[in-house]
Length: 237
Ligand code: SF4
Ligand code: SF4
Image 1 (cartoon, rainbow, N blue to C red):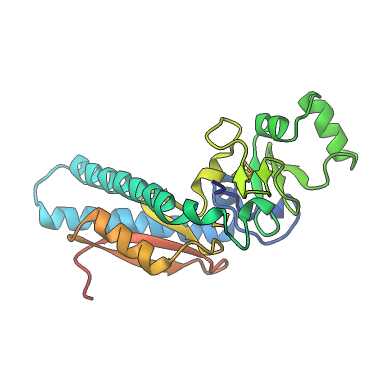
Image 2 (cartoon, rainbow, N blue to C red):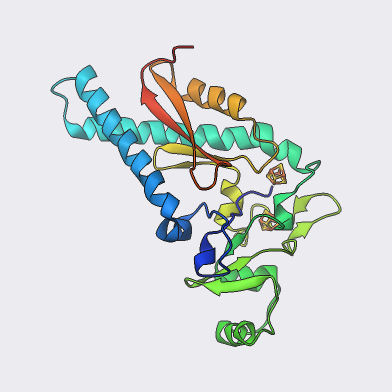
């Protein structure tokens, strides 16, 4: 059900609050992003080196294939973890992300139009927002919209379900939250009470196989965002 929703760093642009964004706009703006991108690049380098040591003489393309395969396996494992451990908990969650009291929902215009059931054009809506007459929970920035501080209009509070589940109107970020693959690593957002980091780490380790281990690191600025990287070599534990 609910997932993505991010806490935004959109804020430099939107409301100056320090809430991490998990998708692209965050990457563009967040200083912590550089760190994260650095981590991802280092994973790629590590894998390249490991691959070269393990398979001397093989073309670099093979190392890229290895990374791609690992990324695919991590993405599938992250999605499976959501299905197995997160979604079943949503209906009884004590802090549903769809309330948007902590998280920020990133939306494209077409999603705003459907979720808020708007009949007007985008320019008219933008003018209304700029004049302070739009929904107070929505702010515009970077060509996108950010909703925060009121429950998502698609959230059915009576049963804790998303009314646009499986539909185009559901933002991508909702599907990603709280666990998703990103450039060969898995990001876990611990603000979701259903995420058990130890279980998730073991789950991912099983997915990539015994030749690899998972290494955890928390974001320096937003410690509830944990990156799980794949490293060559079996776990010592
Ligand atoms: S669209 Fe709204 S109700 Fe549906 S998952 Fe996203 S935040 Fe929750
Ligand atoms: S915070 Fe996690 S468990 Fe709670 S509703 Fe959102 S995805 Fe489901």
